[in-house]
Length: 224
Image (cartoon, rainbow, N blue to C red; front, side, top):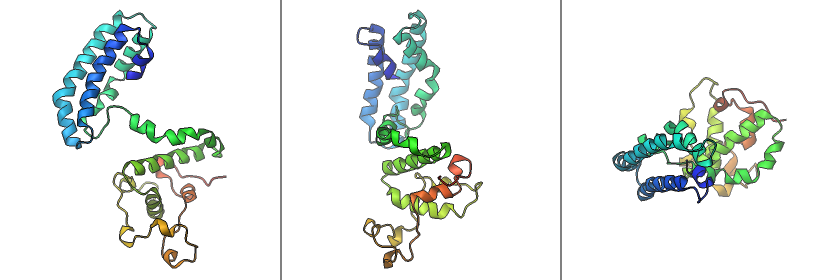
């Protein structure tokens, strides 16, 4: 929401007024950062909702008086058209006020986006995007991506395309091999005939393309 008003420039008084109002909301978010979802929800309901309602009323009253086509007018219309999405965080303490965390997570992927031109075909690109999303979500949850992918790829091959996979998503995943410590990084570089690897599931990220890809709603084809 802020981006449009920032782009309007410092010489747009209405845009600056909007940024000050939005800054109050972000100030509250800064205070509750790091708290539990329940605590954040309680503060948002008690303090943030009133500011959000005032901001919406101000946008609705001010937008019709703005010059059509101006940066400030476009920013207000953009906010009003997507208000339900912008205010979703008020009803769920797990949701962030913006998508800055997601943008930071995909920065490394964005920096090498030209490499994505060589995925082979459209489905390969979709599979690449799915894997990247899973890996970045694992990092966010402090889960070892290698352990997660090896475990999930081993388990998903036994399921049909119509079987539920909620338990395999990073937020719900439980490492079935944790007790055996079968995913120690020290053993990753061991030769194939190493004793540590004899009873260990063999999987590579490339195996993803040969498994039922239920996350994409279709069966993945082998990469060409």
